[in-house]
Length: 356
Length: 263
Image 1 (cartoon, each protein chain N blue to C red):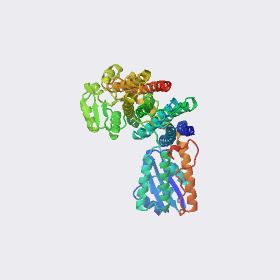
Image 2: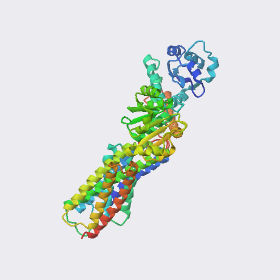
Image 3: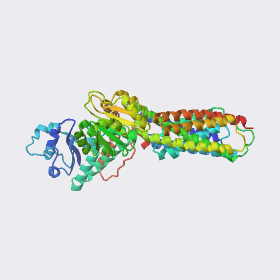
Image 4: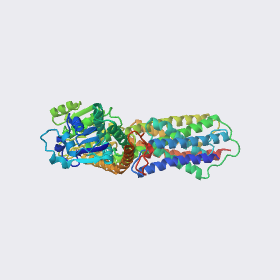
């Protein structure tokens, strides 16, 4: 039985091409009709891939035709964008995909959920059987191990999630935190939504235009506060998100210091995503105030991404060992019992030994 | 023979430190479980040492500076075992181990393990007074460690330089809550120790009373300042470190005067 994978991803193709070949309801049946004993379509916003097991070689062109969403699509013109991995390379590729190593944002974990969903769908319809079952179950285990034993998923990599992560590092549970959104821009609304999704229940919105403040407050399930009261609110709130279009800083050390005297033992986390900035940089020097502007958030996101990249080698080692074992298992036949230790014997510094 | 147990115990704490350093060099820092077990095994050996020494003396083994230091180190490990995991501060192991190693190495290397001439008279009030005060020192030590953790995290948050360790520290407000709890534990136990000192039945040297009252006053001031908002959390954390350093120095003074006044 030949295991293979045919697909295209964000590495080489634009979203339009991925849309053309995102598969359709008949793809499973079409794949079986063209000679695949087992076939599974993994279709996400960043990739479209077919994992299949077949007794004879199925040409890439046939697979691509099964994925095309319309008969009018010129398949030949797109064939060059598709990659094909056979046997061990296919196994290794799936392990890398499931572990988030092939993702646009290295280490993202959403792909694992999508792969599980695709596998479940194929299993339910009978499109995935013995070979793909073993392959995907192993891929899920590898992904889990990579996530547990390396720092590949460590740290947030987008501005919004960095802000929310920092809020959690300061306050722990966000349920009892009060947040004020100053200025009702798209970015601040998005950050406010992220905070609400992590538990912030008391959200206030203040804007020069009361109507806009009301609208945003309604959208994020908060309440509007008059613009001339926002400074007083700083005595009560824990998180301040500012994104006004003011040309001069709205908040300075002189303005904030008297307000903080009432709340000396509670930190204040300020997220200033306005350009030009709404908060003077000297505010960060105040005790208990943590000021982050868009550049510092971006820089942390980049640091996290760099940290994740540093972990790629360790993740690749885990993948290589599992891939080699899986290859041996396929060579011996699937009936042989799996020899899959939870702890792969790999080099120093590559695994979190404390976890093992 | 009992000193070998102490050497093994110190080795356990050293393993915890070495593990932390290795993890940090590898850019990974997640010492929770490993450190908890390393400190736990070290604590068992400490307990074994104190039991054997106590059995030989026929009383609580705090008769000289050597034993006092080991008792404090044992109290620190005890509070770590009890308080650390309960407040999800297992990372404290990474910070606890160096302090315990420092204390134990000093005790093992310095010529301070001088046996008393003759058998000391048993006085249950005196033993209670001394031991409860030393357990309070354990709580103060852990408050000091939590203070270091607080300042490390605070500094990284202020400077926007987040290192690997940052992601494994407990949230700032939870750390501050833990510092407050530990200060309370230490303060209540120390007050008990201080009060029980008046029931010892023999006059204590005035310098001892002065030093003990000084430590009590210092921690009372920190707690007072914390609740009356005199000090910001960062200053409370810094005061915990200063307070424990001062308390250790005074403890040395108390033990020294106690030894010179013991017949």
